[in-house]
Length: 293
Image 1 (tube, one colour):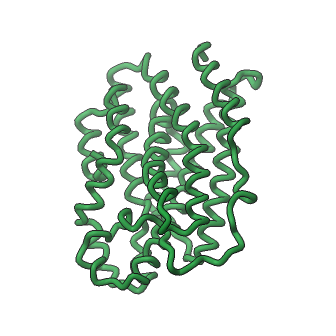
Image 2 (cartoon, rainbow, N blue to C red; image 1 turned 45 degrees about the vertical axis):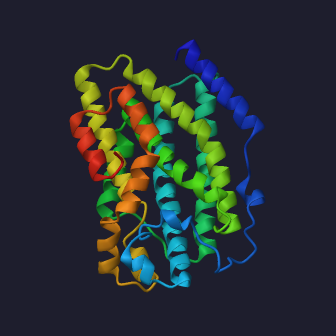
């Protein structure tokens, strides 16, 4: 690894030493959830802005956002487990004295804490377990085994950036349950280091990539992004809060407000992917289907 990359890893290690959290201590896990609080900023609900949302009572709206928040947290656990395995595989032969080896283990430790934090969030919200579909789970199994280099790091970046934008809104919103705001704040602060590392790694790996490899990586990253983003809110949340699931799914998928929110929140991410050559025409079509561009 280059001296520049080693210097970045050392700075990230210093940052982690100065500003990291223990969610078991920092988060109020004991106070019961106030039913008057949302689980996320309501504007981020998949049904916000639809006719169905307008028909729901305020209590139903709040309950839906709590289930949606739990679904997002569950998806976060799923992808963090994939991320940890990819990082371990990537550093398997790296000399342990190097800063990037130690940073990778630090990031894995962060992700372990985040996954436990998200798991406890779901438990406190009292929701059923939400997982991606069986097909997506099996695709994830293949992805964690086969993805490497820029494909792995750029996919990590997409998952982290999309969640980061959402959580920055939720952590500042006093309508959101206080413990969820704390969870989001912890994740945003610590993931900022992870995103810096993922950007630098993706950029570095692509410097020597051939045109054919770049095109292949662009497709893999876009496909991974599609399945990550479309799995964030499970279709099961609607029935679990007493809604007509078919109607809710139909209106959520046609929700122009939510699509516009996703596109605007991903503008910076798409600029980065374009700057490193990962926005090929096939990739753009996939991002458009996922409402990321």
